Image (cartoon, rainbow, N blue to C red; front, side, top):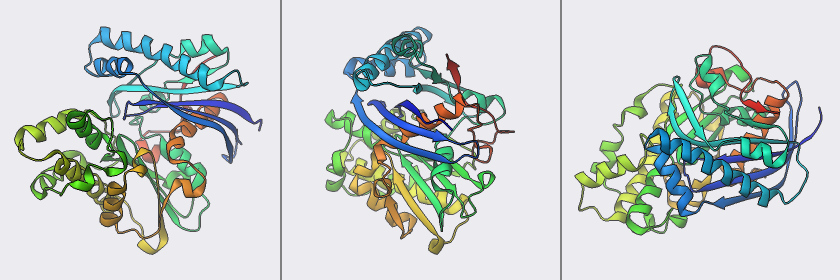
Length: 367
């Protein structure tokens, strides 16, 4: 198959910036992936852009329309700066999710027509809807890439992506596509980030500096572990509507005297423990025959990584960077690979993950 130079764009549940990855990608009809990264950068959003996204999250139709246009222009401007006149064959953009209801609907903003007009190359977008149209949840998407990357290992592989929410993929040692399992486990960095925003005016807890000063509140942790999403069977996905500012506000109102560092520390424990609970409940694996690979922005939070190790009890744990897959880059790579699959009319959903009735091609295409 022809190698394509692809720009992959990802704006995730953290809502803090746009991941831009430029890749050379070849994907054969037998689903053999060959890739290399030419360049990768994350561009932070301005306060105005973050405010537009926040306005859209409130669900007002006019706010969503305005944010769609504003973010579309921003994606194009950032991409132009990033590409810097280098040749590209294809762009694949996820957009910013502002609404998702498992198996019912999904809404991403960041109008792709601006990218099309600026670069004059095919643009792939709206990559979740086709799976929903055949009975799937439309999420998570990462298990497709994880299957391509890790389907020939000598052990079963669990990948854990720590974005705003946490999601896992389980690739059995057999490497069979229809045996891959994947789902969101609950919070990733969202609750920790929301606390930092509320208390310190920071977008995140850099290297766990606040969490290191705190202690876990066992009463709050016990309450959080009763969250109904943790007891929901896969396929399942979630977002900030369940694990975001509203949940943090609710906890603060009921425990107004808790020091902020203790709340942040408790949310770290909750994230780690919720991941472990999902692994124990819904995956069938032997501790001696599995390895855990962690990626996403959460790999930079040392306390959270300690909690994940403590609660999961998996001993063979690696950060994806150790496998030459940079943690921060992986979602942009996913988008680039999904773009190539769409251009080549190859199915890219994972029915065993999303609950879809059949394999389908994902994404709309502007030629």
